[in-house]
Image (cartoon, rainbow, N blue to C red; front, side, top):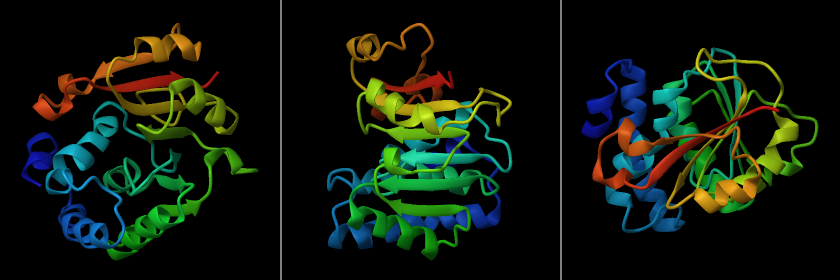
Length: 211
């Protein structure tokens, strides 16, 4: 938890309590359902919570914005972002039912009122639209964009970026970006430049604006 406060100093008391509760909840659920790598569970705050908050460090969503988390897994980046932005609406979607159960249980346990957990693929969310989509290491950039572009509405619900896709990825992304057909419009930031920690070497944040 100390590593979160190293980079963010403006949480209120309720947010601090919510963040502190995450470790016990995820350790408990991870014994039942493996939603976080066993080797990473003891580094939850650095490798999962702080990593998720790289998005918040660069993009402040407006109050009332609607954000979908594609393939949220155990709730990342959606849960930390929902704590950070209590007045933003988050829909966390995943095709694996047991993971969505954990997401809903964690959200309920810490009193997150701005999270809805949905069992299903994001491309199956008929009749829904969002201002932003977020994701973490779910699928190739081209696939993510194909799935989510039709669901992103035009406009800008942030002082920082027009509506679009913001995703966290790792490794050598040159070929993936080339294959996506989005090379001319995608923006890339090294997470290690946002949070200079060894865990974030070769970790990146990508942004694609709504077309």
